[in-house]
Image 1: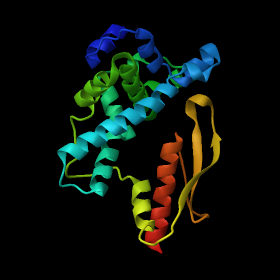
Image 2: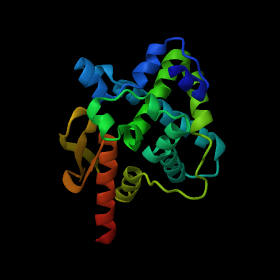
Image 3: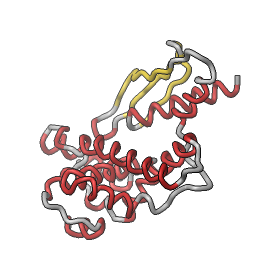
Image 4: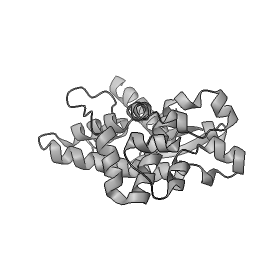
Amino acid sequence: MIKDLEAAIGYRFKNITLLQNALTHSSCANERWHNSLLSNERLEFLGDSILGMTVAEYLYRNFPDRPEGDLTRMRADMVCEKALAKVAARIELGKHLMLGNGEEQGGGRKRDSILADAVESVIAACFLDGGMEAARQFIDRFVLVEVPVKKLHNADYKTALQELVQQKKNQVLSYVLIGESGPDHDKRFDVEVKLNGVTVGTGSGSSKKRAEQDAARCALEKMVSE
């Protein structure tokens, strides 16, 4: 069955355990081995950086007439949860995931956040197994096929907030994790964004990164309405 996934992504692993690790959700790792370090979360961390850098380089080289703000928003569109979930659907990644019983019963195979994280994990697995070229091939084939040249749907709220506050000198933004809840397979994170030490927005999300974006969105809405 895992060979079907290799065929779908167009890459055959030398070390198949890397791909198996990329498919292991934290709910499965905690249920089977009581160890979240055996899940795909570490691979997701690495894959997120590889994906972001590769997409940024592609946009920089191919859109020399676009300013930094446009490039940032284009990248945000291409690597957002919804876009990566579409990649997962294209290669039928959901049916290959290893989930815990609770997540299985809760429809985890179709949950965008789980699918997006798994795509990033597969990118990292390709990188560790075949180097940067293997990771690039995956990204070229499945991510860089749809570049949002005209409509930018998913704003990078953190960047937009940074650009807004930098209109004045000596402005310092910081993001503070104020809480997290839920089981390991369905975490919720709460974040405050502070401007010069004063809270200007709060947000929540399924990861710290998404919670920070939500907090920045909240802060922007307040500042624009004032």
